[in-house]
Amino acid sequence: MSPMKFTICSAFMVSLTGLVLHRTHLLSALICLEGLMLSLFSGLALWSMHTGSTMLSISPMIMLTLSACEASTGLAILVATTRTHGSDVMQTLNLL
Image (cartoon, rainbow, N blue to C red; front, top):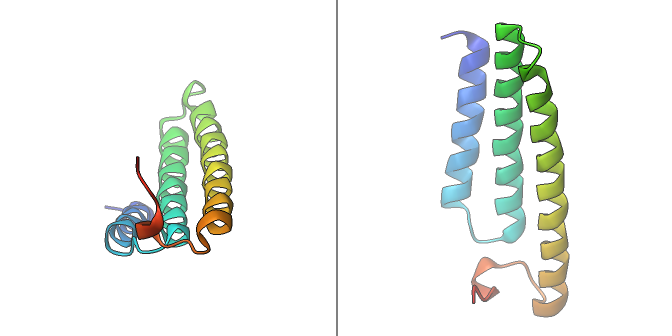
């Protein structure tokens, strides 16, 4: 395994571990999700460069666009939650 692949896989696993273990605040969960998306973007970009296919070169840009949309939606939910409940603790959120 090359050092670049190891770095991307370890970044993904660290972000996934952070998402699983530190779910007390909404902001920490959003930061872990952004780390996951960034490592997936890096892996997809390297894979498309490695294969050299022109059809796969648009995939990282689509993923980056969806990641930006996810981040803006998450921040809007964070602001709305903080305004209504006074904090971003996940236990105050009602899932129903």
